Amino acid sequence: MTTQAQDQSEIFNGTAAVGFKDARSADGTDTRAIPAFVFGEELAALADSDPRVVVLTADLGRSNRALDFAARHPDRFVNVGIAEKNMVTIAAGMASCGYVPFAATFGSFAALLCAEQIRTDCAYPGLPVRIVGHHSGMSMGFYGTSHHSLEDLGMMRTIAGLTVVCATDAHHLRALLRLSLHHPGAMYLRLGRGRDPQVYDAVPDLVPGRAVTLRDGDDLTIIATGSETHPALEAAAILAERGVSARVLDMWTISPLDRDAVRAAAAETGAILTVEEGNVTGGLGSAVAEVLADAGVSVPLRRHGVPDEHVPVGPPAALYAHYQLDAPGIAAVAQDLLKGSQA
Picture 1 (cartoon, rainbow, N blue to C red):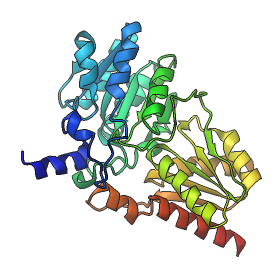
Picture 2 (cartoon, rainbow, N blue to C red):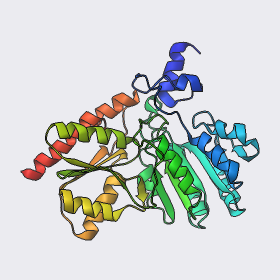
Picture 3 (tube, one colour):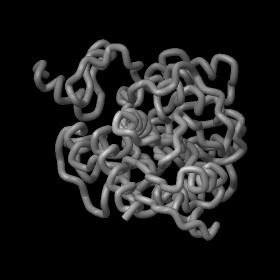
């Protein structure tokens, strides 16, 4: 593989060697200060003291760094090959025997291919299976619609008995993995591509079902999740320079949603902008809209994400800019929302 091809491989899905991963990002900037994918590393540490932890993957041990787990606990690592549905069912069987399985594959495969297995084999019997959908959203860039995970939040949050959470950065992912060990039922963990800029200075203390207020404000609330949380914070800083005070919530818990935080945002800031890297139909924005409708609350609301279409093929950074899911784009959408609310 030539150096140029390796560059493109890393830009696409992060399958290059660790040393190479540390020096590349989707937009070509130097990201050596950004933690690499910590999924396998953190689970290996948890497994040191918890014999229930097992990890399964569908031939993607390098992409999700499950190989970091396999190196320390080879007897508790299973590569099922390209057989995602079987992986979830195997994980359910292991959970029924007392294990806490983490079954990981690309988000598009985890949620779309395995929806039936997640619902019937994991959520229905209430088994503690953790389905890990990584490289979610548009982060697969050139791989196109078959690998873009834009519908997973809308699908997963409608499954009864399934907890749905999104990782914000490396520290946040560590917190989610630690929290998940004590969760009694099935869980879907949505991860980015392992290169999300740091939002949290340390591993946060998360309260199940409660969003995190990252920045306070009075003019509107930006409710973001996953990889869109960092650009939402940057957008709030841009808005502040323009005289707009924006609250920013990290709504990492999609199901259950923090309904109290949504109602408080509506009452205290008067306008809400939801931001997600996914189809706006059925995702975070829809969940927030349902809370407001159920409460009989009417405030300006904009669901910002990918419209109901299949996205073009291209570098992830270009796609984020195209859909205004980068910081300048989010700031522009927020100002448009406020302008409309004042008309």
